[in-house]
Image (cartoon, rainbow, N blue to C red; front, side, top):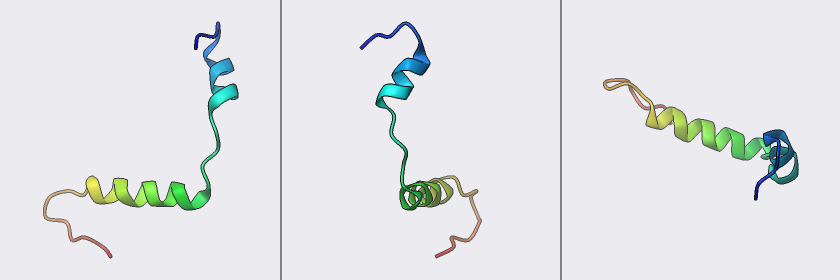
Length: 42
């Protein structure tokens, strides 16, 4: 779908993520971006 302004698209179709989903995504990102040799935290 094409709108003349990007913020129109964002306002119409984007939804807020629950805090629990944001935390999960942050945790996965942290695990995937650990530097080599760093211990994993459980």
